Length: 352
Image (tube, rainbow, N blue to C red):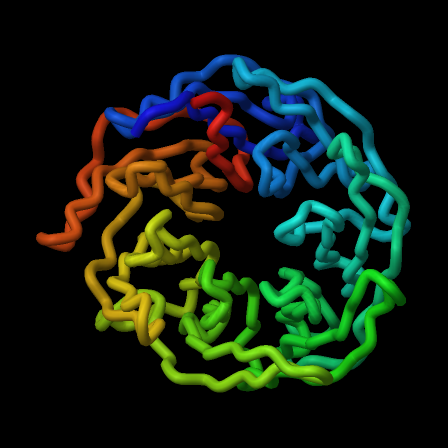
């Protein structure tokens, strides 16, 4: 792989052990991160890059913080924006980097903010609070918005709520800039739909359930008033081995060529690898192996698709693996990197 890549890892900073975002140079060939510096952000619980690779966004106590990504990989703060709610847990942008979507776990709120031409975060465009009751007193007794994304056709915003076991679908367009509820995907009670990703062609999406520990695969077709969605597969997040009560699906990533998918399992402390058929969208279990850490809160796939990094929240570590797809193996490729309570990671190409 040609070009220069950087990795940015968001961490909690409340205990003074981390500043917020750790910046790493990426050695693609060896499948390793090389620590460079730390940048201050209050409790960076989720980080993403804009689709054009010029801006980094982080959740923080103050709302959302934006950073300019420079050609040498360093980042400088652009601005921060208040989301007028409790702190978020997930971010996404649309494909044109016009809006950023903030998911609010604690207050059950999805907030849409405008993005400025320079990548900085603008004003709140619209927001919605979910209402309703779930079924598990400890976890699912009220709305917990955990993932929000604009659909690839640009017509809708889908909002996963693991508290009420639904993915709500809202119509959204640039003209009205309002969220209008048009449909919902109802998951099984107490399954906790946590997170979903669309394939690049927009034909499929993958919804992982934190408590039921399954991935549901859906086909997606656009529509004028609501999309046409059909479930075509349900597959366990830990493969054939039995689940324990402590297992909680925690992360979901495609390989860059989308021929594989990776799922992290907290409690079980494993990463599962699937083969993915790009034509049918279906997943086939390949392997499920330990990540030499605790609570893999995120998985980072290297640009060559030959290596992954497991972001281990509870052990405060990043562990690195070479992926042997033919043999179905994850082979640890060196010692772990220590980083305080890491939450998420993004790799960005900074120069050709």
